[in-house]
Image (cartoon, rainbow, N blue to C red; front, side, top):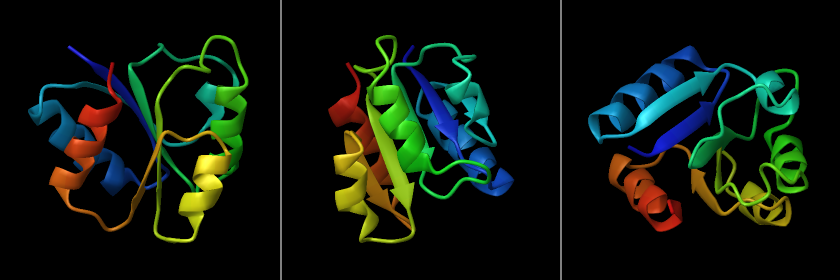
Length: 117
């Protein structure tokens, strides 16, 4: 079973993502902020979904940090944002994919399938 970590500071989004992805057959771990990632205190997943707007830390900064660490540099990272202009910045930060909120569930699943090993 593929493992996915989701980081978003909106509890409703975390709950919805958890349910959707668990129903699709993924093992899901959720965090309400990026601190576990910055402290290297999280189980290494097969893929990470990271919201751009997080309280306490910017999702793009976390993405850059992960992509420069030996342990996580190969980890596929999908960045989510309500701002479409963030896509270019997400790719510059090292993200493997981007989804603009709101998005269709099928679009999320297609993106995951493309980036999961």
